[in-house]
Image 1 (cartoon, each protein chain N blue to C red):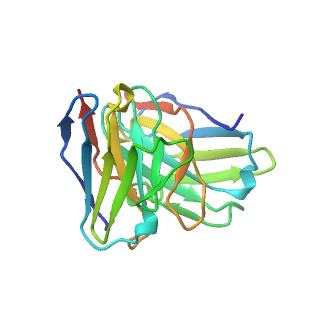
Image 2: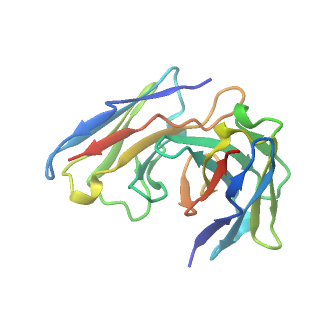
Length: 109
Length: 120
């Protein structure tokens, strides 16, 4: 099974600061199958990044994704108040095929 | 408006069954893989199941094998999830999700979710 481990569990920052969130897989994954989502309280998740580094439609350019192999990163260059939320990475693969999520990183003020 | 709207959640006793529905609108439903993802209140996301655009192939997470049945009716733009032998561990919000691009993980459209509570 593919296991995604996100760190840190909670990240405390202030508006205007830079946030760096990590997602590590227990084995090499295909970058095409790595996505990031944002979930605000009381809302459904929203797709931010797909294929490790491509921004989804309508996502501001302060959000960027990078990485390959087993280590992936979501960076938010300058935090806005609405960015404080929980972030999940997701992958696809494994045997049997699965779409596991990481456990999430809570970004708090 | 492009939209997914789930229904069918509620309070169910352990051992019972439930069928969740998801109504799709604003896009060509039959073109897309569709998924169910669930979330225990206050916890993380867990993928449940996937179905091919024409309904011919289905995939399930290990935890749901044999108890969950995903299906679709493209004529009605509807996605379904039948859950049997419910246990308290199945208590969660269940999201209907569109997979935008075959071959890439991009769950781009989510419903608002429907809450299933399993309790005696």
